[in-house]
Image (cartoon, rainbow over all chains, first blue to last red):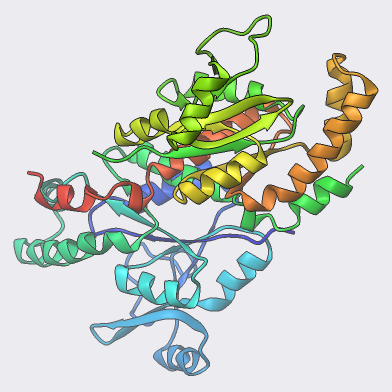
Length: 202
Length: 202
């Protein structure tokens, strides 16, 4: 059986990653999503096992000790990480899996899994990104300023990614990400037994 | 401006390359096709400049001398080759271009243009390929036997290609080749100025 592919997806806050991913999973229901393990309390509207596994800090630290995370980070005393096991299982089962992670996490995963393919979701312009953050209406000007600072650093590091997809229109962006994922299913190194099969099949 | 991509397409005789390419050019009318220069006489139904440029042997030899061919070969005293200039012009103009060539030609082009992306069109099975050649009804059993011998060698070398697309159904195969070509337009190294543009655009 062919192995599955690991797809790292990053992009600055406000670029519309979540909507792109939502459309992507509608287009390709077989695609898996890597659920992060985190130690912060659950927020309103969140559900265990949907986007995150909410686990105690002790459990998280034990995973770090046992090298069971592809990457992890600490923000405001809370741990966030990508468990390795579900990703490895997906690959072994021939399933493609998406890991949504920031540029630092992406760099760490790339080191452990050089075969992972990374896609950066890019805003059409910095001005447009700021506009989208303001439109959200959920954040203070100070928080928007901080998010924009981080965004500039992230955008500058987009060159570390294999693919860069501009989210001008969310439907087009999802289609383009879908196309990248599809196309890699035809990569020769993702189909190691194909040639023998074709030569021997009756 | 972003550079265009060079796509090498190969596959054994009878696999249905021409039909796949025909559908591909319908899907993507901006795609260019590399017209081979050949010295054999024009056959019925062929037109100058459609799939081939029919040129005198002296002209062909002068192109070899001047290193103006990405690859060339001789069959039955006739020369066949891929002129470099239209390919280089397409790339510089940001246009994607398809070069249809056999596995030997593909290997030569890869050496001169390591950035070229190669796609092998694969039959579902060797038995199916033979079946298609027989169905054509245009070739003697002896010629079919020879074509099958060549096909086995070519299929075994499909691992030299970046992508392998199975032509089970021609519409699906064309869609998959289209997807590979599309996806590479989002490759980070095909968009070298994008990050700066996003950071500076107002």
